Amino acid sequence: MQKKSTNSIAILTFFLGIVSVVQVGCKKADIPENNLPPVIDAVTDLNNRSLSLTAVNYGDWIMIKGKNLATTFKVDFNTVLASDSLIYGDDTSVTVKIPAVLPDPVNNPITVTTKFGSATYNFKILQPAPEIYSFDPMAGPAATTVTIKGNYFRGITNVGFDATNATIISSTKDEIKVTVPAGVTSAYIYVTTPIGTVKSALTYGYKYMIYEDLATATWTNTSYSATSVLTNTTNVKRGTNSIKVNYTSTFGALRLSKASPSLSTTGYAAVKFAVFVPTASVGKKVKVVLNGLSASGLTLTFAKSGWNDIQIPLTNLGNPATITSITFQEFSAMLQELYFDDIGLI
Image (cartoon, rainbow, N blue to C red; front, side, top):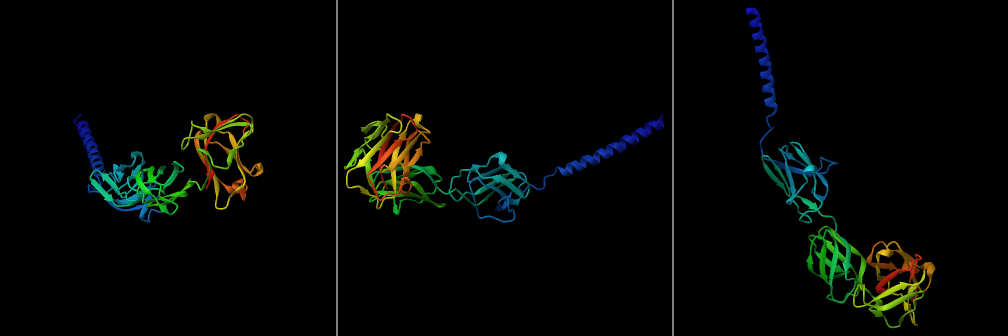
């Protein structure tokens, strides 16, 4: 019996020894690599991780290279935090997606925070080039205040009406207010930031008006199969009046005709006008025709309700040498009600 007890003690001692060795090994593995503050050496993209970059763009994925990064729990770009779900790292690198909007158009330093400190890396993260979505009003005299809607306007340095600089009243990331400079009749709007310059799709102003509150002298209402009121006071885009058109028959038309002599198109590039589209007319059509030449007209399909600003190059309307009439013909076999304002040439 004594021998059996001695053997049991020996086996138990051996087992405890093994457990002790395993425990010591686990503790060694759990020791952190270091407790030093983070260091940032470079920024790369994910395609060429050996090439250091000097600048990237909003919304890009980047790799932050350095040391002591294993415990990173926060990355911010000029105080804007990256989403936790978009941060991946180890001791020498952190992969992160830059937020889509940052405070500065160019200079947005990167700060990495770990359990043992933080490091900031001065770096250029560039906003996209500016974008112009719309502006209002579409025309007016010098000193008119124009509101430009768009995006990526931070750091704006200039707004020009063609080559003439405007006075900037105020600006935000997505809106600019400017004063129209003297001498501007018809011009494209240019917005410049440190990233680049964008040109408006439509012009501001007109070189020649066919209708502005009233039909211009020598222009008369010759509509057919439609009731056209040229002194309508509801749904006005600019000024006090607009043209209200009720098409009383399918393929009826609002038509404005010019008395002799006809209007030369020399110096003009496009027809421009505004049309108010009720919800019932979204997806419906109107054909714009010069001089009654339907074959060379352009059919428009209305994509949205409300006021639509439209500019059609004369080359898309047969490129006539002179103009004797402009027609807005209903082209959906529907008794539409539409409103037109500010019809002219640019």
